[in-house]
Image 1 (cartoon, helix red, strand yellow):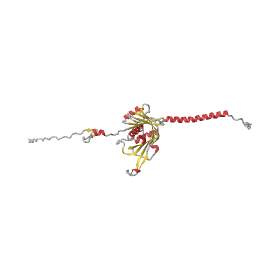
Image 2 (cartoon, helix red, strand yellow):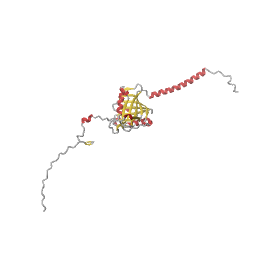
Image 3 (tube, helix red, strand yellow):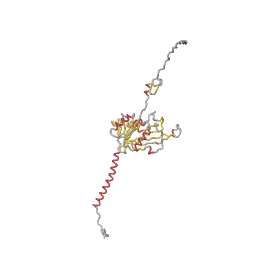
Image 4 (tube, one colour):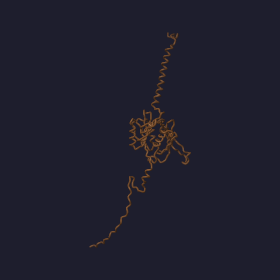
Length: 304
């Protein structure tokens, strides 16, 4: 028979202290020391501005190219399908903006294949502005030599006229919020290489886009030049509303003349020219009847 093994008493091992398990979040495991306090995090403001750009149906090709140019120079925008231009477009646009998680809207509305109107609105509470767009020149038409990087943040410059009246101050604030690219936006580049210029001439807002070109070293600012990129257009403000795409009228331009009235006046001028010709013919006939020619003695001389 085999010998029995000696039983060895098992040594008692005291359990070590297990460190506290960090909380799990959607971004992974986080240490409590690295997580910022709620008080400090709440004070930081983050600009989450997003702009919805769309147009109405039956838009002209030239105006559609202008809309695409605006999409290319605004990295924080979202493009949507065409919308029917009806009386209920305000409710439709507010719903679209909410579905696309945007806070502002640029709506290009074309009428009679000739006139372009631009709605600039803060959704869903307003305010909103309606412009008539004139002097449209797209990037493809101008063929300028300027070329800035796509997605870079622009520098917004305004003329001194924007600080004169209350409605110009409101328009300036809306333009800053809509055309200014938010900092650290995922589609934007972290530097500036072009300038958006907004200037008021004859109660119209003129838009220009320039590239900042530095041929020499960056420290030498005298050698920096501006090269125009495009597009170009002119905004004639019609009305400022308190709500989004409607509401109480805050301002109405007293000098605005609709393009329909201008075309009607031109037709009246052309109609006046035709009426003058008809009157001249009737006057000539009346003159001939009142002053008949005397019979000529030699009229029948060579008939034989």
